[in-house]
Length: 251
Ligand code: ADP
Ligand code: MG
Image 1 (cartoon, rainbow, N blue to C red):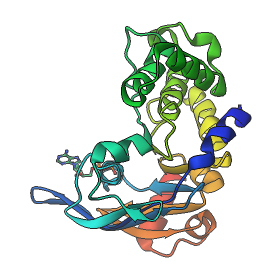
Image 2: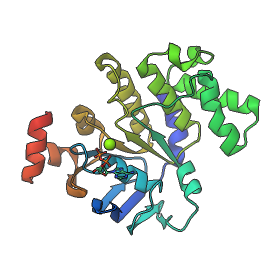
Image 3: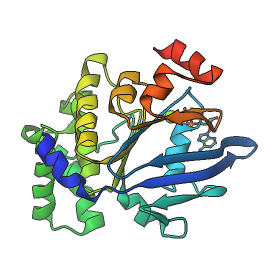
Image 4: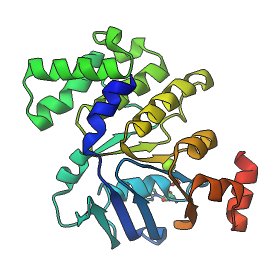
């Protein structure tokens, strides 16, 4: 599994958001957020519900345009680029997998490469099988998503994102909707991807993952970064009262 994942991570790039601001009406959701992921590294975002984590990911791939701030990918500002181009460089995995129920697993994965990368039907199928193999699910290629467990469906969603050959991967609470016994397999796959050199920004409540897999951890509250740094610094020596309080609730 790790070999296939390692191979495709060669193009990973860095991504930085600087001084990002966004408001929905009077609701200031991001109030000057800085976040960095270095090429091939993993940055984890933790923080209470409603602190702006999902919105931050959506701003970083320009599903929302920031009202202020900059987004730099591989050393170059991308705010003036076509947002679709940026989104093709970033793979997203959500809490809910959003697979098409009436298509097979392989078709779900092949769809993006066919439509957005212009691959032929046969080439897209071949790529889909390769990606499924990489996440340990080649045998499920012709099954419908509904016949897979939640954990398997999430691995398919990861394979679908990887089939677009992203340079950075975003995960937004990718394991939060899974039954507890299925969480481990998905986290193991994410850890494999990280050690294979993929650049990743991971929003998660899995503190074990944040501590062991991350290179960098960002703690957000009320639309600002309260603390960031290595997992050792944040988990073993949290400075702010808010982070101390958050950790006492989740650990
Ligand atoms: P988190 O992911 O940390 O739980 P979110 O980014 O989902 O937080 O939400 C942060 C805040 O932004 C919340 O107050 C939420 O209600 C608000 N919000 C998020 N998306 C929208 C939207 N599309 N329109 C209006 N308000 C939104
Ligand atoms: Mg969220």
